[in-house]
Image (cartoon, rainbow, N blue to C red; front, side, top):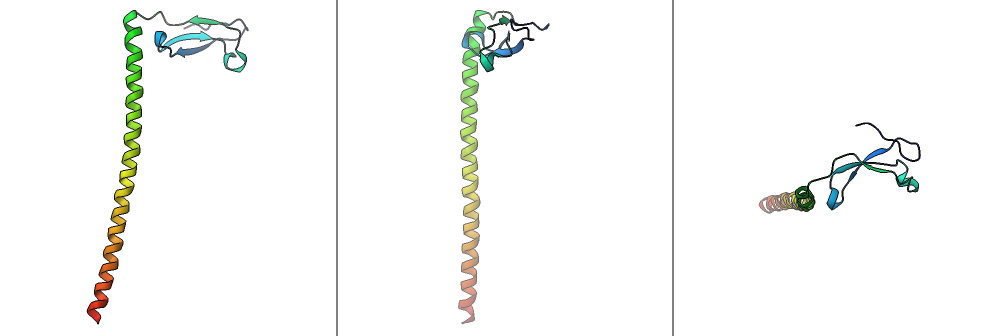
Length: 109
């Protein structure tokens, strides 16, 4: 992968396209693009994708994003349930100690 020089005279930066038609396809772009729009240099590094890939990859990426979101929600729910479980244990222990102490006082009378 030989570097390319953009119209600014800088070494072009390798970036990755995430559009539906070119998902995960790498290209060379101007390093100054984010700062001031750069010089407009653009050149594909990877060969064009076949039509099947153009149709399949976007769906796979959507599936991955959907599963990651579901995992994030499940982890959040798990943390909440774990907190409630621990809180209930603490509450039962406190109640047990409180009732054990009051039974001891009744027996002393």
